[in-house]
Length: 182
Image (cartoon, rainbow, N blue to C red; front, side, top):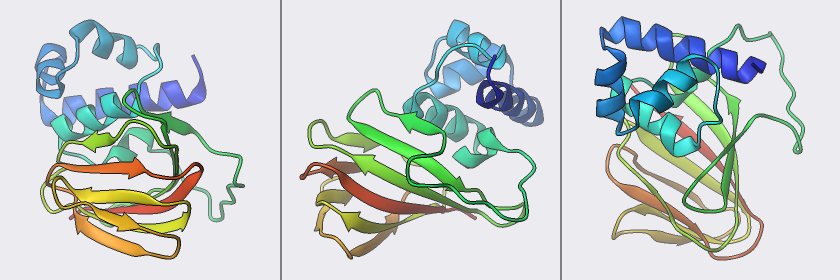
């Protein structure tokens, strides 16, 4: 079992226990199979970003809590480094760059996306706001039905507690995403 899988397994168990949910209850709430959740809690499997988002939403916690570890005083993540979370729906790969300390809810991601399928995201916990800064490429993003076309240098924020989507319209689209939650 790899270190990231151990970290995710421990966090899911911790947060499920904190929420007072059974294995079956959490699986049903997240819309995943009980056997999948059991495998994840055992540190097995390779969860997609959709599975992790669904679990975080069902537990009513930010996604970054599923990666909680002791943070060093300084941290450098080179462009080619970091734990990649991939989508099952589209060519979307996110790397958690920074998680917030307790009582501060801010998660920073570097995201690379390729044209093709649109990544649709279910609402995150109430009060979540997404902040995006496009670094290269071009994309459409925002609330479903109200997406904006974004170019390099464009900053866009929107309520993440409503259905929303991301779609790269050029190859190698790179953007920074900050998830802010109360």
